[in-house]
Length: 294
Ligand code: NLE
Ligand code: FE2
Image (cartoon, rainbow, N blue to C red):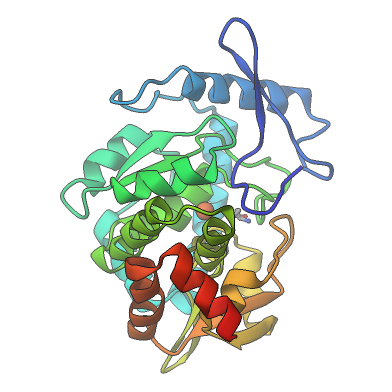
């Protein structure tokens, strides 16, 4: 089950430190025991990781490398057509491999001189405060497993393709990492669960699923659109609302489907001013006041 604001599949820890991953109804890997065993093994490696260590090395199989190749190849032209300028700049600077799944540890090394961000491995569900708080310290919690091979175009929960192709290319550009850092600082500042949910939803409708107007059309900058060869072809047909903090912070969403409501910035500069400015300064009181005024 995925509740709002939950970014990763819930896990259960066993006595020996190994974990088992819960998959939601309708997940393409639910009835595939080989896939589930693989998910559990990769999650166990992350669960045994200690802060300060590099992320565990994963022995990706040929089949997993093949899923990576299929998705990257499919996304190549679609990114050129539908991704925003800043994402394409990050993608060029980062230079991800398209023929094999890279290791998180080598990606952190590549990000260090670009933005200073580093990956740390997520076994499963990361509590919201930990997920966002890490961003303030330039750390990004990431899963390491690969989506199920039967549906490479879309996965209902974040996998390594989403974390690395979707988020990684943005973590390689300072204009984006300033926004990630600001979101992290905002979550550290707010105390109430209501304010946390509000900040988290603004993150969802921007850094996960945001779109932005460019002179030649509507482009995606949200990682969830940019890691899905299926959704990236559909976002222009969705309901597009103007960038509005209270609307974003109070609109419900369902992580398991293509997003039907998206919020468009007039420009990347507007995103930085409105959303970056909000995260830089928001408090429990300011969020409450915004809601009451709306
Ligand atoms: N739906 C995304 C994809 O297929 O890449 C992953 C989940 C984003 C929250
Ligand atoms: Fe994400």
